[in-house]
Image (cartoon, rainbow, N blue to C red; front, side, top):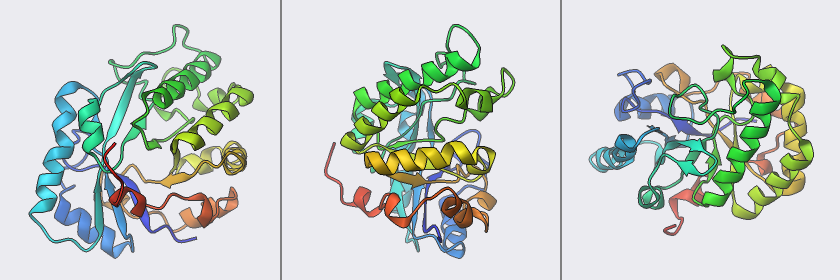
Length: 252
């Protein structure tokens, strides 16, 4: 399998991204990496970040590009009932990616008890909230909460998910067209978990997005082994979203 799209790329407008993440540089790097579609997913963590996608679209309109750019965002789920991107902004984007596990941010609700079972339960509630919101297309870096490593082992959380509840969420995700991201690093950290997730998603009709969460130019292309990793957990081309669907999508 040779991935041809990356839906999770940050520009310099995300404060955690490198200044080198300019559209011209992203375009060149993506072209050399053999990518056909690149999704711009700058962070929206607070209200002041909501102008970032508009600025990216303005910049794109002033250039000529070798790859197909899509203008989206990585919006933070602040709690099970709140997402940081404004609804009117979300409706104008090509796609909306939501991160429901930015637990390291001070603006994000954490479970009352900082233990693995509590994070597993809280995350499923976050996903239910994302589904209820109804404007999300992709869930960023799902299930494996690498940012809580200072609090507890993220792998312990994987052991605590209620799979019956998770399956129910997957069925609803398929009905609402919500996909889940697969990215380098996560798969190798927990291959058995993601192998089972792939199986359940296929049964439920849920698709996967691919993204590297690139904050530097060297992260835009995938590692050489990523295609093999995807195949090793059972991913087929038919399990992946088609980025073209976002280019022709009607207003939300």
